[in-house]
Amino acid sequence: MLIAATSDIHSPRYLNDFFIALRYLPQHVDLVLLAGDLADKGKFMHFDPVYNALRKFQIVAVFGNEDFREEREKYKEKFPDVIWLDDEKKQLDDVTIIGSEGVIKKPTVWQKMKGIDEKFYTERKKKIEEMLCSSSSFKILLTHYAPTYKTVYGERPSAYPGLGDELIEELQCKPNLAIHGHAHYAKVTFAKLDNTKVYNVALPANKKFVIIEI
Image 1 (cartoon, rainbow, N blue to C red):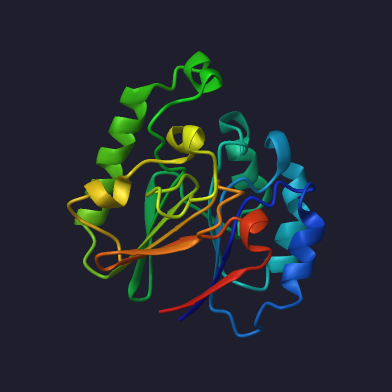
Image 2: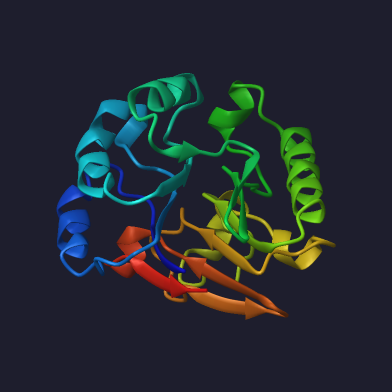
């Protein structure tokens, strides 16, 4: 299976970069994975040109922090051909995709104002673990937030708690592959932790689709 993955298009902010990257996308891609922050500041209609460019492929996507929670049902209604995973999993042939916005170590001030605290992320971490442990096929963890700090290197260290958490290191049931975004300024976008390959596919960091063959 050939996978093309990207995130953090923040349409229309990085839409030009997206279309440049699209020129080099192999035509025989089996699956496109989108790791969140697809439109800028929750304006879901700005995802439309991205969707139209990719609709010939099978697409699985998760939401990012800028895909505002109150707008997520609109994404699902407007773009029903996309498989949207929001703390859910999906079996595709011999592959299970566990999809979530992911976990950060320290909620932002804005999130706390919305009632999202450390307990919220602790519960989400448990749910991700449960989904991984109940899956026996090849497992892909698709999140917006980074599931390890290994692939955010290059960002300010003080920003790490808001970029992700050491999820891969802590999980008892680990994915075979972990794909995330969120870290725009990372200089290291790939790491291997034991048997888990981790890719930061943020478009601002890579300037291209990340192509993965499994």
